[in-house]
Image 1 (spheres, rainbow, N blue to C red):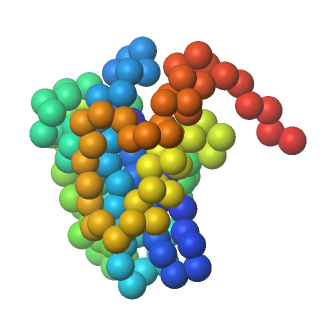
Image 2: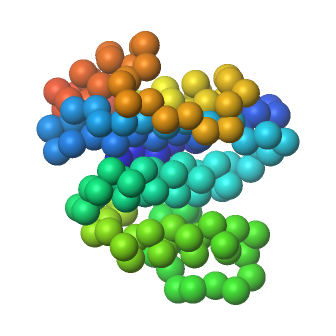
Image 3: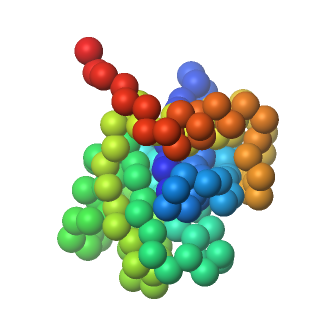
Length: 154
């Protein structure tokens, strides 16, 4: 599962996808957050909806990749009482306790499929949409990911 978030000046979108161990697309989702440009909220929503989708599909073993190390640290860190998104973080932690999840950091370049869905979410006025088949235009990034294409960082 890959999560990614992108922001336009006043539009925040989130998105992600579930794939099997060989990279085959299982489902994807994207959404638009009205009246917000908060990247932290968008990343946490992407992780939450991805984990919730995995639970609904009865996926019991999952590796969740995010390019936000800050969000990963909030989720893996100790419980907190005072944080803007404490309820959302707690909801994510509860989902993690219900299924076997490993949360990993990935570089932005390794998150192209999720990035595609995020941009789709930010461009539409849909709060949340799930897709059983990959949207038009996602096939190329899926193929690149499946072949293990290496991107060097300069």
